Amino acid sequence: MKKLSLRVLVLLAAIAIVFSMSVTALEEDVMVTEVTVSPESVEVGENVTIMATVGNTGNTSETVPIVFKINGEEVKSVNVTVEANATETVECVVAKEEAGTYEVTVDGASASFTVTTPPTLSPTPTPSPSPTPEVTPSPSPATPTPITPAPSEEKFRVGPTVVLRPVVDVIEKGQDGIVELYMDNPSLNDVVLHLDAHVIVPAGIHIYSEQYAWATAAGVAYAPGYEIPPGTAKTISIHVKADEHSCFLS
Image 1 (spheres, helix red, strand yellow):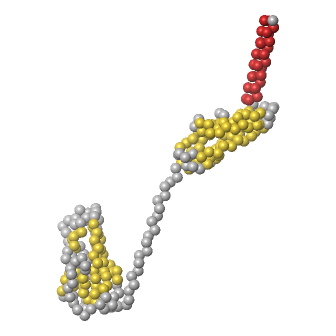
Image 2 (cartoon, helix red, strand yellow; image 1 turned 180 degrees about the horizontal axis):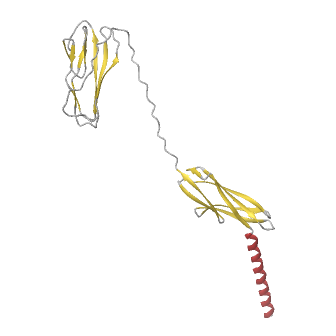
Image 3 (tube, rainbow, N blue to C red; image 1 turned 90 degrees about the vertical axis):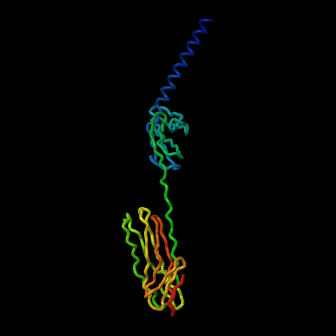
């Protein structure tokens, strides 16, 4: 009885070994032959499609598990049946929220794709339209003369800006016209901008400013000197008034 039992055990072990070898041989007939990704470069959050081609070189139909891994981490596993001497395609769709290069492996076959961060677009500001003042026909205002910076022994690195520009350039008798005196001394300079303003004033017209006093003599209006430090600008509103009198207003 003991010898018979031993022979039975040896026979069963031999059958198990043969069966195991048969199964291994069948599984080796089925393998992933190719892995592709599309597209190979995407932005954060966009989908990437992974396609695995599975081939069966054996003579019988086989069902095997196909495991998709990204950077060594399993993202999908699916069983696929492949007929004898045929191929099947298995698909996996992924999306990554971090930029970088990702390695794809499917049962020994590999591919890769890249995830980039989309560029940041700065909004373009929309300029506001400038209001157009309503004016009525009237005699022409005083004709301004160019304002020249006072001479200085020091030199400017960047030329200053001094502009006398009309704002309300048509007035009626007794109504104010407005001219702006704009002065700008760029911050690159280390010299204070000194200005003396002289404006020719025709008869029947005088000028004044709410910020500074103007004096009129011999048809010319004089204003006190202005000092504009580097990196600053100043705008002075000059009112032009047409009437029958010449006078001085502060």
